[in-house]
Length: 351
Image: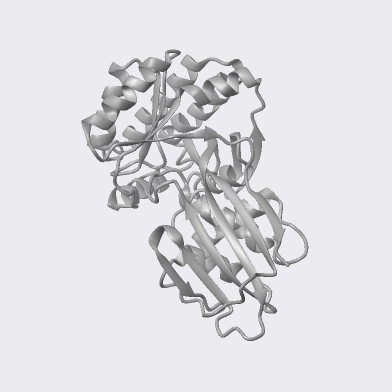
């Protein structure tokens, strides 16, 4: 798999992860319609494509999954995704030009399985980079729909739409899904003072264990499918998204924190197993340290992470983080910054 010393050009692409997804579960096929509030944050997923002439290269496409220490050849159009299915399927989906050879490197500071939409961010960043190999550009909405289709249609996985939408758009989002998977996206534009204060107050705590879909989630899906789109459990979740949007526009952090708490309680009503013992312990510490809101990220269950909204005292926030990390060596604060941008892609000439 030798390659020339210098590529023709390099394509760079980054996309943010997602936290505080109030209204999650309502962005799914069984909900039919939904409202979701979420926030795009860094650390982001990063993709870099080194592009070479195809002549003289035995292996046209190489994928380097840097976080996993794996580098391997990808054969498009064989429809066998046996190493990193999401990445291989995305390359297949994008029908990359056959007159180019390239190596794709993928990296993220965010841990996999943290329930922060990391896999969606990686897919969005990869689609954006691959899109740059051919004329024309996909819109953020098209990228989000493509990333979601890869998971659901090509890999036959359960997936809502909000992770991909947030990663493609960035910022603070209010998503109205009117007919799965179609949705409108309203980005919340607020004064810098609100943006900066929200950023200062937010904390992302990783519970130290990778989140995987489980039998609990399958049971919840069966129950919700049977109850129908208008069931009260789903409506309770939709309402938290609306309350979150209104709170942020008003700069009312207490109201936002209450919406986060209501969402976590609504998740628990879907199944008590969606709020793990580790998550419950972190919530208890956060409450004792004066936090005003907490949200179990993603669908909930074992592993994953929480978003915590602190009060106006930075010293209390730092003390809370120390207490949480001392409670369990696996618990880890992940520094975050609000992302004003979603998918970003640019090209660097090397010749």
